Length: 483
Image (cartoon, rainbow, N blue to C red; front, side):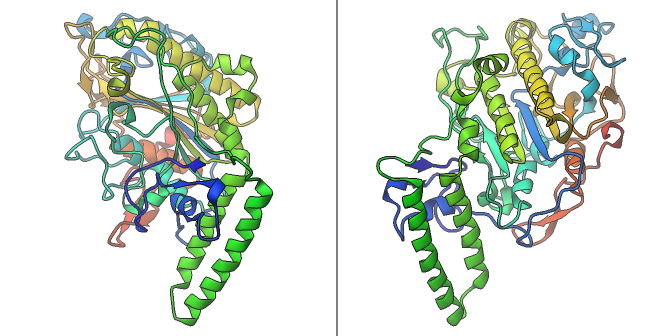
């Protein structure tokens, strides 16, 4: 059996992306479900030619709003009520100090750029600005809508071309909000249609101790997976190929009849693309093997840490090696699934304890392993790594030793390909409360990512009424951090 995962919203064909294809019972008329699951069109049928320095992007999304003033915008001379407990340490780039609890990242600062003045007015815990650049508030944050703009990854999927065999966009380790039994907006295709949503994995997270220990901040274990992707029983690739050949003959006859009846020729071409992608995922090992971490040297797996976030990041690196262009890894929350109160970056309580004992060390190890791995494999110069959250945290430490919601000034880190290493852009005020100069919107971050990929941020895609919509929602590239 094969199950491809993604948005449960229904496509135009009435089937959801969670419909399943059972490989053991494929027949000439079976086998449509997988094609529906991977359905996508492109603007002109051909892939968009990318001529930027970057060939692929890995986004590390820290859900909850990381306190970036305790990560890479420390204020050791700021007011007592805001400066925090951590000390800055020097890095491989002058003037680019980071927290003492990020020693690994400090060794890679010469390949990083930090933007310290990101801000928006779209509300707290709203991921839509970060993924799409759309900066207006939305009416709820527990579901997504097909009227929202598409995410950067979905745009890459849209531009991948009608004959693309591999998904251009993958999302790990689960859809955004799964751990809280909601579906947060942001990483979807929006008005482009759910057929451009990411190939999304599943996970079964767990913790070592009982999950009824609030504020413990214990490591979240697990690995992302694409379940049921093996041909079972007596089904072989050869038998599957024979059925594909038979189905192709029937498709050709159907197309001939459509043309004779004046039916829509383009729909046949679209179906061919869907079918090709479906068979490719079934019969090709490239995507499946990226998820097979048993093939990885245990020493390498260990460097990424045995956390769900770390193992998902390792899979992300393997996916870009296999040819997937845009991969997102989210450090998500699992309040509903595991009754864990503080497993993400929403640190209203015990901010400094959780950051120094749990959040920063595991992030640092994972980020360092990714940078080293990309560098050693020769992919770092063409891979952009983006570290962001949906907002930041407040300038004042509250009575619970935590920091509260704050979208008015926070930092985003970019590293690797296309980036002018060792760059600090923008200055926040003495409390890291508001930009002091060079304010940046999430749309500007999106535009910078597009520019690095060689995609014009002013490129338009059609909305549901066929009106042109700029992919970066008016954002402009931050030229000072681009190589």
